Image: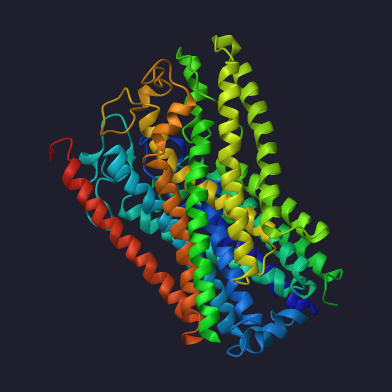
Length: 269
Length: 299
């Protein structure tokens, strides 16, 4: 594999990891306080919430990629499959001639992650509305930046909001957008980097490497968040630049290892 | 023949959705039995603020990680049985889920003993009758969840052609079912069942942390009472959430991939997201009108 392709794969892995790290900051994470209707957000931990959505994004991207390489979309994008298998997909000519299928795989990841995120948020809201009987409000802002609804009057005593109001749902969708795109890009980089040519074992390895890099970046981001965050309207969101630096460095280092594996002869020579 | 494939795929998606609904409900109940649901910290905190209890307390890891482990173990054992011994897939999936849930029971037991022995200094006893009666319930519900998730992961790989090997799919779906149970079902456990001593219709004030309900409908409350209550809202909604996730994601891919060179499935997915957001807005307005406001505006 030529050096420029390797560098592009390294860039893809770095950008993918970075997108995951940034995406985690958009997810309204409430943790245990949210499960007690004590804070706004979805009632589970940062890493697992981000990874749950990323997992469906990864499943969806894998599905679409399979459709393009061997399934019903093979005739629509005939050059993608061979390019992914012989390692030329991430050469400059490979990218220019396959930009649409690459975009399709990334968007598949995004849509999968968004579906997961919105169902997680809204089904929990049904429970808040009918089993706990509390309105869906945030205590971090006085007015919802999207709907303009007054928030502070609707917070029950001694709590910091409950449920996932519209602004937090929109923020979770942005989290799904970044996380899903990052996960799909990582998977694409590994499959096209030579793991795809190894058959089922290669696909499993690519999926596992993606999961690994996804976890590293979401854990780094959750250290940055420290506990709960409501989304882009939360004051804690200002900490994102630190996460950008940390996730870029971490993903770059892991990317160097990954391209070293690829260079030393995984599948494609 | 396209229609026949389509019908088969859609039928499989529906079956997968049904399996996922059962898996989600079983997962949430299992985590309620073990107090693994959020806010599990409260069960750990309770003896420290003087509230001794008879809850089963096994939350040494979050639900998503525990379920990734459980489902992946079950599916991997099933795959090994199918590949090496040519066991029928249905029997292999059941055996895999059985072995995995027994392993899970071992972890539940050690976690219960470990967590409660750490609270000896606060006077919290270890109730052996709780261990004997609740652990089998945990194993039973873990078996249902592991079997259902293993089954639909296998169907997804085998019939729908998702390229990941099915133990990896089971692991990913394990994380997702744990995330769903943790985000949805736990609210019913954490905000309502653990704190039925606060008035209905409010969140838990931070000052009340750890003061969990000790008395049940008859006698002292234990985790089996908790699951018996959460089966009304928490478990069905978790199942609904997971079933919707599995079915709607497969449905849009099966039906709409053929349009606009694959972009049809993406547009359909975004439309689904839009419908959920609109539904959420309607729900939000309804809750605001019905329950609030709690204060009058001063400005």
